[in-house]
Image (cartoon, rainbow, N blue to C red; front, side, top):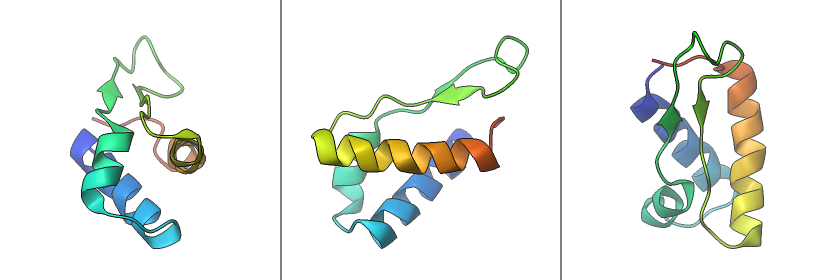
Length: 74
């Protein structure tokens, strides 16, 4: 799983569950920040959504699910 793959996962889930456009969700999600697995052994990636309250809440719910499935990405 790569940064690109996790972004694709976010987009697929958000489009299916919430609707909207890929472009809007890509802007809301923003960049996936990747950290060293050595210094972040439980989860080496994060996001900082930049949408409205409802959009950010949807992104955070998806992020929690994806962190459970993919805590370490490369």
